[in-house]
Amino acid sequence: MSVPATPFGREAIEAIIPHRPPFLLVDEVLELDPGRRVAARFLVPQDGWWFQGHFPDRPVMPGVLTIEAIAQCGAVAVLADEANRGKIPFFAGIDDCRFKRVVGPGDVLELECEFVRVRGPIAKGQGRATVGGDLAAEAMLTVFVGSEAE
Image 1 (cartoon, rainbow, N blue to C red):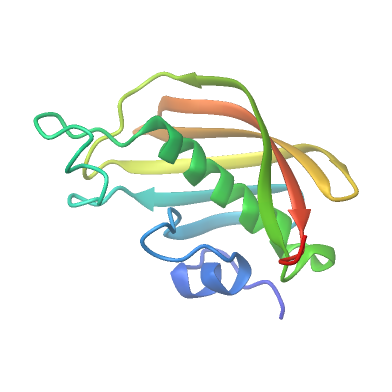
Image 2: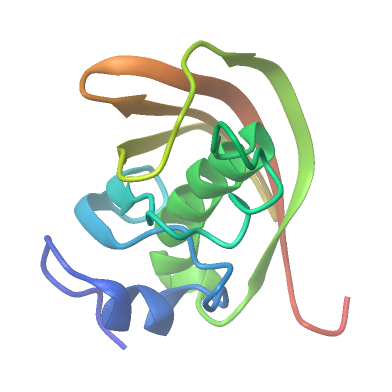
């Protein structure tokens, strides 16, 4: 499988990463340098499954899901690299995580992840999510790329 030209949507994203609805948190990939950098977008649904309980009177996308969206964005870059095709990315660490803005229904999350170090199956990437140009969350993510059986 060759990497599609950017921008590309969910069908191509699902051909690269193993995540599926309702847990797929990337709608469109805007820029991609396989194994190095990716920029993507997620339109936070008005009726996201998490809003019913988080919080009923003030719907907020959980911060952990914002970090997951960044990680899925990064997974596109990692798994678009020929050496990692068909593998599964697992979290190995989340460092220097900061939340700066509430993310709500209808917000558009602009996602970025740039890998600063890759050693074998371990990759470390600086990720961030913004809404309307305002920083929502950022973290240094460590990912282990393994096979299904590991």
